[in-house]
Length: 174
Image (cartoon, rainbow, N blue to C red; front, side, top):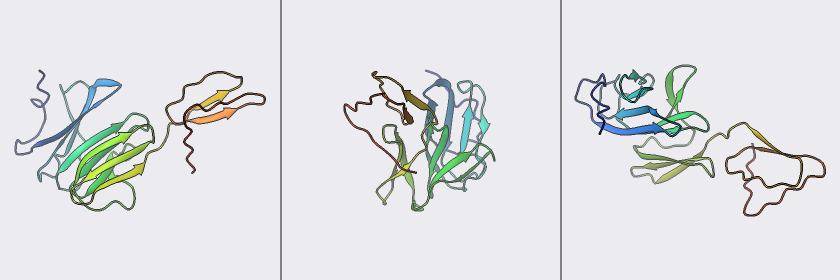
């Protein structure tokens, strides 16, 4: 067992509500807290919890209930008592995420990587979904060959090449 909370710079009255570990790096993690301390909502560590950086700027002074990191888009999203927020890395602050989401407590966040959707469980307002951006890479098919493509991407099929779809093809517009 590892105690990741011993080095957290919180005053002690907050309750830990969620932990997110990056799937590509187990030393990269985020923790969230409930409570009403305006500057103690989300903390980030790149060294497995040895040290922490406060990432609470832009969040309302309300409990943060969940957090999720999308490796594909590199989005960091958290659920609060008044909806969903996305971390803006350019401005180093949280901003309201999406349009049309209710101002209601969020209980859990999940990502469906197959459909590239954020799935949001709320308290009293049901389950909501929002599209997440796809990675920006291209698979070129220039001969008859087998390609297993599970993540979203752009397909380029050159002249005289063959594309055979064996299960399903999900096409999303702009």
